[in-house]
Each structure stands twice: as C-alpha cells, then as structure tokens.
Image (cartoon, rainbow, N blue to C red; front, side, top):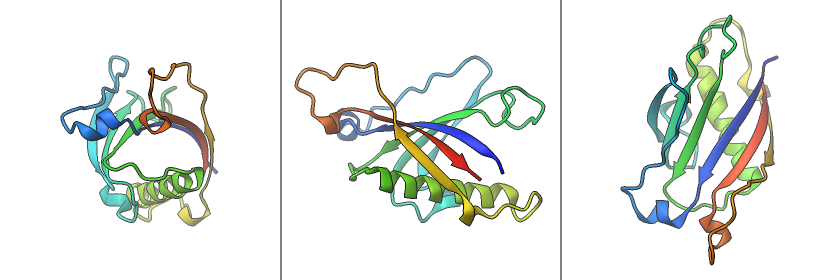
Length: 149
C-alpha cells in the first residue's frame, strides 16, 4: 500500500471569487514544472467542485529512484463558495485520487483498487493573521492529509 502525504490550499477569498482576473501564484523551486487544469478534471468528472487546479511537479516526480519521487503541490481555485466541510473535502479528494489512479494505471500493474482508498484530513494551523474586518469565508483554509492507497 502506498501512503501519500497530500497538502492543498483551498482558496475561498471573496477577492479571488469576485475578480476572475486574479490568478493565484504557486511558487515552486527551480526545476519544478507546472500545469493548470480545469476542475473537475477529465479523470474525475464526478467531482462537484468547479474552478481551476494549479499543479507544480518536482523534477523527480516520475522517477522512483529520485528523492523527489511523487512530490508535488497543488492549489484549487474554486469558482463558487461551497460549504467545504471536512466530509465534503474528503469526498471530493477521494473522487480526485480514485480517478487519477484509474487514469494513470489504465488497468496495468500494479493492481490497485481505488475503492479501497481512504483519506484522513486535518485542518492546518496558519501563521497568517486575518485581515482586519475579514470574515472566515474570506480566509484561505489549509489542510494536510494522508491518503492511503
């Protein structure tokens, strides 16, 4: 079984939602490559979240011998402000990773059953101070999690 430590930043700020020209910057070290895809992605069309995903991949992402094998970070920029409870996030991320697994493996070895995936999320504490007068919905929520597959 693989264990993947996944971190994501879900943007819920009204500034981002109100201004379609606002594009989150996802900085990455030199040598990391990136891409932007539409949510829901083609491999997980059953996701309810809509918007954009910004992904950055470590140079050794696809090399099992690399110390950065399967290392990446992503940000979801969500178009609407859904009620993102821990249960909703868990469900959406499981749809995402189950679909990703099926798309990448295409039935080849190793044989993995995505229905057996589980995810434990935990809201991360942020060092950032809320802006004066900001509402909870105006703040970014950060979660860390462990995906078992």
